[in-house]
Image (cartoon, one colour):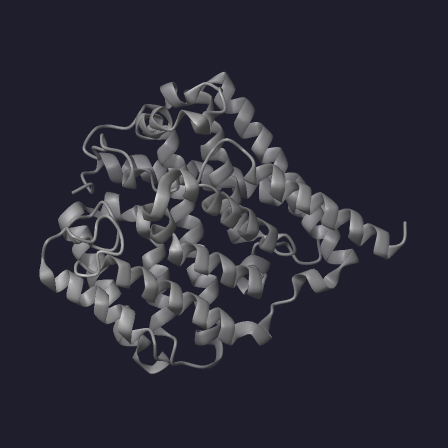
Length: 357
């Protein structure tokens, strides 16, 4: 088959995969706590004997195979279409503006006097459900929105963001704030905005890793606290497309975990994973309104930046150099299982250790 035909077939398959993922009945429920009224992080999570069922194993195995197939295709595409690994280094200024703009717009909407979003009147620490009426919090958030406008003042914005994250831990506990590790990614990104060389180049890889961790964490949450997601699905029955709520939750969790995992390890198909995530997030906006749209602004901005930049040294480090697609497929499958197991163990550990606030 000619190279051009191979590229066309590959692009067609990728487009079909993206559309298939985006059309699934599971919405962008990455942050269930924003919409659920029965969240109680002090209640124990489901035990593994209740989580792991025949259906759970079947769906998990299916997504493991999809990830393995994606890694194999990734390696094959890298061989026949090396330009798919382009780093997009020439778009670094656009990437920088996207991330800074996303953080700035989000912090502006959090300001307790802006009332851009429903939770504006009550005030919140970084996220909608972490309510706080301290006027200093709102002042810090509007200050961040202003400081990110200039590269040289971004480190000050990073410091304020770190202080707010620390305040969230003090008020709500480490367990709750682990949902939002990606804010620490923004701290790293903004803090090194006025640097050059390797430190500056490391900003997006670290932010991508932090975002991937957060999204995998919220995916695990769907398995261990399914009642939170179930309440939302019962209030929005069209999302389930007539399927059992319990089944939709399991599928949604694996969709989110698998895409987040691929954000961390993907190379040629990294942009596809980021695009698929964006489509899932955007598709949920009509159902969940402006809280969902504004709340995910910094995440969508980061995903756009990933689409622009493509693979980074972080993703390349996840691959075995000199090995073919088949070897990397097996290695990635094992890494997927390790990541899933470790995230689940960490979730149980933090919840049961009293780090929940």
